[in-house]
Image 1 (cartoon, protein in one colour):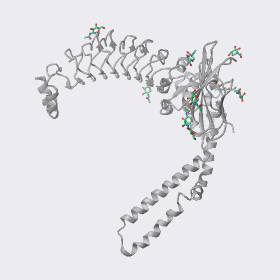
Image 2 (tube, protein in one colour):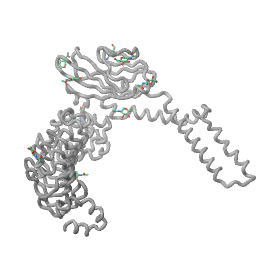
Image 3 (cartoon, rainbow, N blue to C red):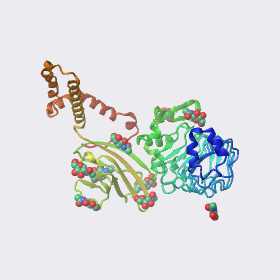
Image 4 (cartoon, rainbow, N blue to C red):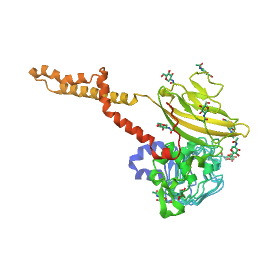
Length: 464
Ligand SMILES: *[C@@H]1O[C@H](CO)[C@@H](O)[C@H](O)[C@H]1NC(C)=O
Ligand SMILES: *[C@@H]1O[C@H](CO)[C@@H](O)[C@H](O)[C@H]1NC(C)=O
Ligand SMILES: *[C@@H]1O[C@H](CO)[C@@H](O)[C@H](O)[C@H]1NC(C)=O
Ligand SMILES: *[C@@H]1O[C@H](CO)[C@@H](O)[C@H](O)[C@H]1NC(C)=O
Ligand SMILES: *[C@@H]1O[C@H](CO)[C@@H](O)[C@H](O)[C@H]1NC(C)=O
Ligand SMILES: *[C@@H]1O[C@H](CO)[C@@H](O)[C@H](O)[C@H]1NC(C)=O
Ligand SMILES: *[C@@H]1O[C@H](CO)[C@@H](O)[C@H](O)[C@H]1NC(C)=O
Ligand SMILES: *[C@@H]1O[C@H](CO)[C@@H](O)[C@H](O)[C@H]1NC(C)=O
Ligand SMILES: *[C@@H]1O[C@H](CO)[C@@H](O)[C@H](O)[C@H]1NC(C)=O
């Protein structure tokens, strides 16, 4: 009966439904639309969960209803459930064991509801959960253990709530190895536990969204963002204008701190981050063939440190592993590369270990090896490309122009200009580039005097 009604309402789907619903027509609740392994009960006017949901559904859409809570074992008869959509309801409570026997859940959408608090037990047992959507609720508190056990979590969205504190400390490399997105934007955080944030796994730091909060401007806040900015994280780059802080906590004195950094002139950015376990980043520019020395100065000042360097091109480098005469590692941790090659470019990470005190400190150096004639080559290449395009255009012109018999031979001279652009004529290639030399130098100048870099004491240890 109900199936027939549904099909009457959706005549275009009639044939499809007839086939797919053959087995399930007794079990699909009347207000839902069931297609293969998906049940859509969206906008069904539901104020409680349908009682008879077939057990084989993988996707259940209950969004845009009037559900106000999730009782114990709400989904226990749906062992194959992976996607549960509960957005746009009135849910304010999730009881203990709500997701009992629903540990297959991968995607849980509770956005646009009325949750005020995320209690420790809410998502218990959901160890396969990959995506958790909680934005646009009224969440003021997230209990410390909430994310415990969600070891498959990849993305968590908490934006547009009223969160003042978040349990960052519960996120560690081993506890959430796949987490790459943590959205806490548009909340009410004024202070962040910077010590906890600095020890967040790198992937989480990279995907941490914190814009449009009520941050109070201070040096420790600034230094963390300064380092993240230096690494070019998208979460900062895409929201530079929304990253604001309040001077002396005064909302009317909000500044975009990555743009207007004058307030932080007195902050010693590196010092503020200098804790026993720290990551410092500096940039080194060097021309190919030159020697470069990369310091491994960290906060550890013991005289008995052991150093390990790692880079993608050279792998792990320790005192004992060096069998290449062009590389040396000095006892003070400094790594020397005798003749740099372009493919030596990349991030070099030094780890200093103080075995006695069981302390580690890391230093990162971003090495860029420039090919001396790199720019000339590029311009030459562009010129070459231009010639090829011209050639093609002229050929097309010649080919497509209707041939008037006596004009055929006269069209040949049109090809002559190409000869002056002959890529084998090196002089012509390089003469094209001289025009651009001044521009290149200007660019370099801009890079070197870029204010943040110089003022905040980043090192430029390039040697020539
Ligand atoms: C639900 O989980 C309990 C243990 O938590 C287990 O004893 C029970 O068999 C499960 N039920 C189903 C239908 O899988
Ligand atoms: C910033 O957050 C507030 C709530 O904290 C919200 O009302 C506002 O729309 C957000 N602004 C933007 C631009 O997202
Ligand atoms: C290293 O420097 C290069 C060029 O200067 C830049 O493109 C790259 O993003 C930098 N890498 C990091 C991790 O900062
Ligand atoms: C920075 O320090 C100078 C003196 O060292 C002081 O006059 C100035 O007020 C300080 N600026 C801020 C923003 O604290
Ligand atoms: C290392 O620094 C600490 C404080 O940062 C200091 O107490 C200690 O004496 C220093 N050790 C050496 C060998 O300089
Ligand atoms: C880097 O380039 C040199 C030649 O310039 C080559 O011999 C070497 O194998 C390259 N190394 C890597 C890791 O690609
Ligand atoms: C250097 O040693 C590594 C292993 O420690 C080895 O894989 C590599 O082939 C060696 N290179 C040379 C040039 O001997
Ligand atoms: C480390 O030692 C090398 C060689 O003795 C020296 O050139 C370099 O300046 C030293 N680095 C630091 C940071 O002291
Ligand atoms: C230091 O690093 C090593 C591996 O590089 C690790 O086993 C050790 O736990 C680290 N120690 C501290 C105190 O972080």
